[in-house]
Amino acid sequence: MSTNTDNNFFDRVYEVARLIPYGRVTSYGAIAKYLGAARSARMVGWAMNASGKQEDVPAHRVVNRKGVLTGKHHFEGTNLMQQLLESEGVEVIENQIQSFEKLFWDPMKEL
Image (cartoon, rainbow, N blue to C red):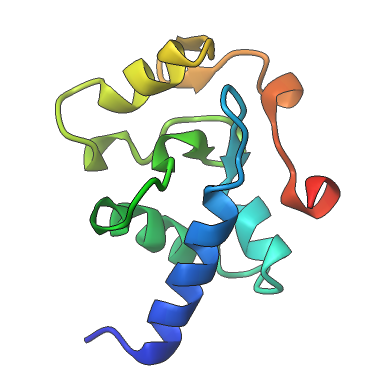
């Protein structure tokens, strides 16, 4: 069902995700906007869901625009996404990243 265009987009998403610094987070929409596809946040989410087959894609660092761990059910175990973030010093309370604005990494500004 996946097309070459989807694969190419997913690869571009993974390239950006690999650049998110340790201890920082970004959003699906910020990656989509950076790639010139501002309305494709959901496709970025699909790419993150499929990223388990990729090397070194820190999908746990990609959250929704409000800093909520909406993708956590795609990780093995009940709290793996939160545990990975906390291991990088990111505080998470009730699936919400604390100090989200301070930790937010915007590829439009950073790259």
